[in-house]
Amino acid sequence: MLTVCVPGPLVPGCPGSDTSQGISTPDHPALKCTKRPFSILLVLTDPTGGWKLVQRSNQQYPEQEIVNLFIPTQAVGAIIGKKGAHIKQLARFAGASIKIAPAEGPDVSERMVIITGPPEAQFKAQGRIFGKLKEENFFNPKEEVKLEAHIRVPSSTAGRVIGKGGKTVNELQNLTSAEVIVPRDQTPDENEEVIVRIIGHFFASQTAQRKIREIVQQVKQQEQKYPQGVASQRSKASAGFPAIHFTIHSGLS
Image 1: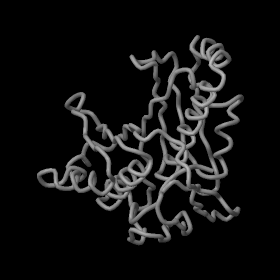
Image 2 (image 1 turned 135 degrees about the horizontal axis):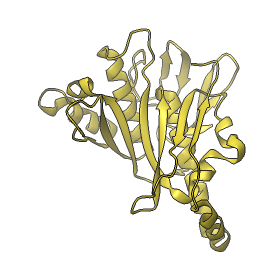
Image 3 (image 1 turned 90 degrees about the vertical axis):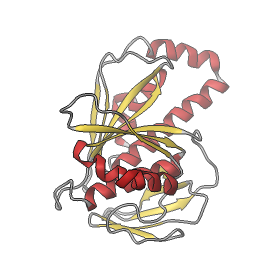
Image 4 (image 1 turned 30 degrees about the vertical axis):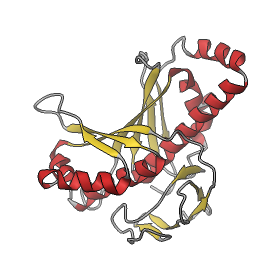
C-alpha cells in the first residue's frame, strides 16, 4: 500500500477529469480515484494487476517535499514550452514549484527538474512530465518511460528505508517494479540528509517515493515518543552504511 493521488489526465491514455475518474495505461488496468482530499491508498487487489484506490482522511506526510527528477536534455524545451508557457501551466496545474537546474556541462545527457510541493502536487507534476515525454516521442512508442528521481532522507533513516535483509523493499514487489539505490559512503549534507535514487516508470517511482516518505515519518514519530532509544539507534546508523541497491520486480511491468 502507498499514499498517492490520482487526479486528471497525468499520463497518455488517461481520461481527463478533475473529479473521480478511472486511469488506464496499456500495462495497468483502470484505477479508481475518490474525491478530494487526495490522500488515498493504492492497493493491488488481484494477481491480474487490478488496482484499487481508497481514500484516507488523515495526512501522514510533511506538507512540502522536494524531488529531483532527471529528464533527457533534448526534452527540456518541450517541458519549458514557448517563452516558459508550458512549465508555468504545469506549475499552476500541480500547485508546485517547478524549476530546471542549469546544465552541469555542455554535453550532459540529462537535466534535473526540481519539484517542490506536497504529495498531491508531486503526483500531478511528475505524472504530467512522464506523460509529456511519452507524447513528444522522447522514448520509443513501445518503450515505457522510466526516469530517475532523487529524494533526500535523514541519514539516520537510511537503514530503515531498506529494512532488515531488504524486507521493506520486498513489501513493494507485488505492486510494481523499480530500482532504489542508496550510494556507498555518501556524506550527509548540511541538513544531515542523504540522497535515495529511484529509477522506474511513473507508478513504480510513486510507489517507492510514498513508501520511503512513510518510513521517514514513522521514524520521526518514534523519535518524539522514545528520543533516547532512537538516538542510540541513530548513532549506530550514522556510523556508515554500504551501497544498497535493490530491484523490485513483478509481473506488472
